[in-house]
Image 1 (tube, rainbow, N blue to C red):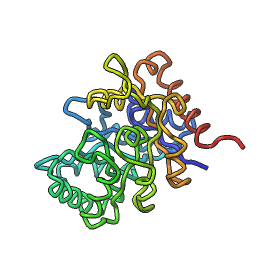
Image 2: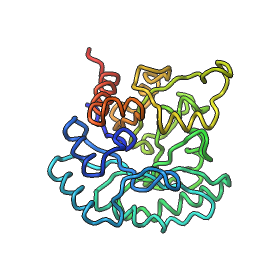
Image 3: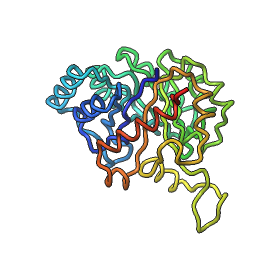
Image 4: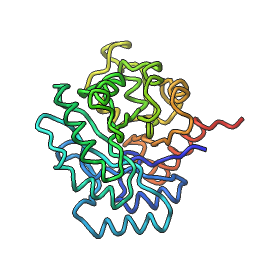
Length: 278
């Protein structure tokens, strides 16, 4: 039976304790929290430096049995100092989180690799994996790049690669590339759907612009089966027991349906897609 986590983007109106209680109500086993923004001034959940929120979140976990799967986000750019993220790691340890989502922005791959290796070393005592997410507009644009960086970093024991269905479809990553990722580097994967051709008026078949890719990722994902991504092929290529982060943000539809109903539909559709009745 699959394990499902309620991703931050699917529950982005919730505080951390609200997200835990919503997950319990709907049948998710875990939640993901964005305790640091993905860009300066961008939306996030506030818990770091707020001991009352941490206590409320831990209490919600204890009451419901819902765990924290992943925390967002560490971005490795030029001048990266992993020690700047110690408050995030300390919060993760208190929440017993399993993973931290890592993005690579440094276009100097040797320096990016070094930063990732230093991060993994710093994270060792905190009990979380450092899951490098490839995204086509970053310095880690595809699965091969993520694997190359981890191998060059010496294959730390807490290294990982995060596979997001949207980024697989919009990068050069193939299903063979996914199959080539060692099992020990796979800790969870993110499911959603999306169109596979760029919208008019500039013409079908053209590449997505970076702006279009970022907008879809952060604002307008589709439920599994609504788009054109080969989700069956992707999730057949991934381990069948891999935990699934349900990351389906669609700001317009979320506003229409409300947070609870949207998160309910996301789980129901994802579960029906991944566990079809025989």
